[in-house]
Length: 269
Image (cartoon, rainbow, N blue to C red; front, side, top):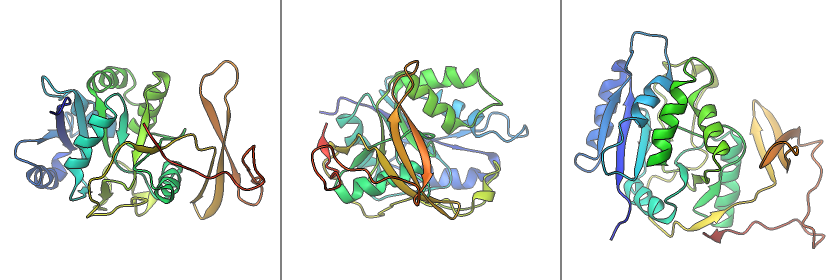
C-alpha cells in the first residue's frame, strides 16, 4: 500500500492558460490542477507564481508536484514520480535538467553508470518540474515570500534546500522535456532549453539506484568546454564548494587507490 500521497499542479500565466489546461487534461483524472499567476499584469515573476503553486498543496498530501506549463511529460511520468516518492520520501526531486548545466553533466554520468537518480550539484536546483515533501513545499513558500523581487526561484530553491540539508536528486533520464514556446519571463536569450536526457517511453524501473559523491563534472556551456571540481568548503561553512576551470587547465583526477581513473558506481539508497 502506498504510504505517500501526491498533490500536483501546473503553474501558468493567463497568456498560456490553454497550454496549462491541456497538460492538466493529460493527467489522471483530477490529479493535475492549474495555478495561475496571482498578479498577471505585474512585473513578470516566475517566483510569484511558483509560491502560489507551492501553497496549493492539498490537505492530506505528503508531497507537492509543481510543473511549468511548457513541459512535455514521459509516458511513465506519474508512475515514476509515485515510485520515487515512496523510495525517497524525504528528498527534493528535480525531474528535468538543462543539457548545458552542471546538473545536466551529472545526469550524463549517472546514465552511463546505470543509475536512476543522481545527487544534485552545487548550482541552482531545477524547478521547471519538481517534487517536494509537504513540509518543504510549505517552508519554501514562506521562505520565498520574504525574497520576492530578488533571486530567481531556482537559485532560492537551491539555497533553501542546501541550508536545511535536504537530500536533492535529479531524475535519470529526465521525466520531462522543455517545449520551447517562447519565454514570458526573460529567458529567451538562452536559446533552446532542452533536457540533457529525455526518453518519452522510459519504462518504470527500480528507483533506488542513485549516483552520489561526484567530484568532477565536465560540461559544455556558452561554447566553452569546462570542468567543475568539488572541494571542501571553508571551515565556516558546511558541505562543499565547486570551482570551474577550462578543460585545458583542469587537472587529471584519479582514485586514491589506483593509477586508473575512479569508476562511478550507483548504489541503492
